[in-house]
Length: 354
Image (tube, rainbow, N blue to C red):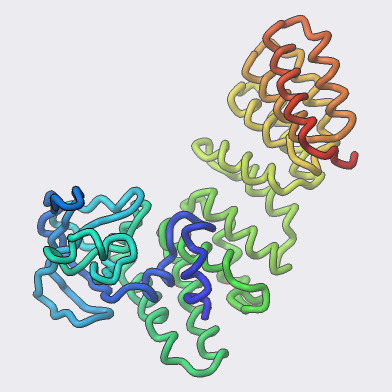
């Protein structure tokens, strides 16, 4: 159901395929210890070279394997996972002969398996992650055996919640991808789940990107008051993630978010001020016009350029008028050129309402 929906769109939507897709598409899913990650397989006709990994199977979740068996698999795709000898991982394998990209390359004559894990999608197995990781994958694997839609939805909901609450950013990201792809009428998140999920929004141990992604999905389903949560995300973000919080919150305008971003724009950190200026360049932040115009008079060239970009992104008639004034009257020639370039770009987009 959801795994099938993810199958066709996961790479386009999220870049890294979620666990549900990997479980559905794999011919084999094994918990293994890497024994050699330095091998290569080379064929002459057609010329092709692929990294090869050897592992010893510790447990089998899907496929005809045996614990203790040694398996070799090729890696293929963009940003393949980097394995190291000795580490324990969950590996998703497809028969090389059935791979659309590799079936006709000649590799299948030398090797049976290829990993589905691209974009550095390595699922390390630790004592902390083992139970939730294996539990979620096993639930995904049972979906084809569940006849009733309610049963499938319940299994998906449990897997989603386990991954979100795992404390592991990669596992939580997988769950968020499923949530983004799920239809609105699929009840993966419900009001009864809020006591478990709301603490994650304020959990500083989770990356801001994960917290923001969860907030998007809760807001999308009408389960939380979005504007207040975005303000809290901005205020509570640790220093190392302030930039991520500014970018995320800026895409969700409200009076509170605009006010927070304007305060950052007027602050003493030039880097954060520039990020805030760019973030204000989104429809819905029209009340920040005066703050962006004021930033055009600051000494920092990076901030002036960011303010110009913000005005262009704001897209209102008043913002474009401010850009025209900067393009003709700003005392700095480089700033005038940058404003003219932004005006040319703005002319290709329809004006936003004030």
